Image (cartoon, rainbow, N blue to C red; front, top):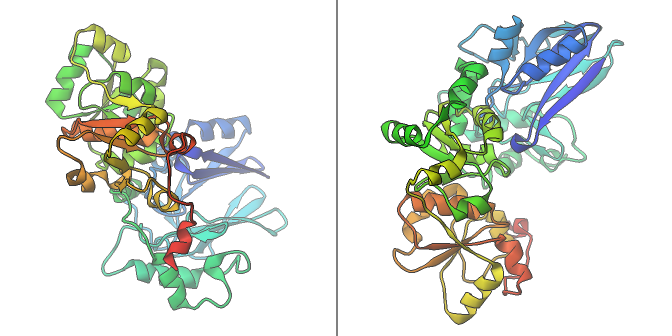
Length: 436
């Protein structure tokens, strides 16, 4: 028996390849499926089943493409209703893979169709479970990301989740022995922020199907001259997405382009900030990273990439096209300006980071919800933007400039550099203690 996890860090997503005696199963495959096909070929194995734990919201699974390319059936748990052919397993239904077996255990709560797969070895002994997002080490899945049907609420789902869970009671806060069902529901629903807008769109794609990844790559990796790039942007209303490093973007970029660097938390930030998976996108990237960019966009459902700028930003500049920059200063220069004048500062980190410690005069405008804070930024007075390390503040600056707000300065190095410069910040506290 072979079990291999294929983990994608930027999505915090784990797919699994399981092989026994010439037969294989894949659990929650990623959008690009060639690695699974190659692994099976290397093992002289046939992929017998594709198991899906639920309709994922945070990424687009590769189940449809993998099934199409291999003829392998897709398996969902009870209550799933995909728009394509699939095996809808009954609770406790057994699936044989070589000398081992996988049992489908219906575990609703994260979503109504959520199913955990129990792996039994060749001796029939319980070996592992694959729980999707139902159960984590030390935590449980949030109950508000499912595609809602009828009058099901997050409290209803939390109740189903309570009834489902039965392990880790000694280690998991959510499963302590003295917790009542009502306390559990209150605990797992407390403080939940609205899920990103792209989540239900990913659920829809996972449920109804999508274009093959090869088609997406063919469209998205089309080379466009600066003139063709500009014409297509104007004709289609495409977002120009610049994925270079933030240090390059601040020095020069296409006006109104959005920066989300490929070397940061790329795909989740694209999903959270662009939101609409149908939005046309044109890419500015180094040539050797174009295919990677299109692939990673597709993982979160952004398939409508129209091409990339041939020759990169340098070609745009050489063609005499209009350009823009962002003023970015060091933390030491920021300190000098703070000491000379009272200046407006905006912190775009997440709430937990801000609560832990921040500049006493900073306005809290988290990047996730930046569009909801646009009215708070000064119209004419120069203001300063920072995050934790310099990546998110440039994203924020690019969004603000695309909205016509140009009177901003980025603080390079973010809060980490600010603290090292000796600028006074609030004492550190544990954010969780502030709830009590």
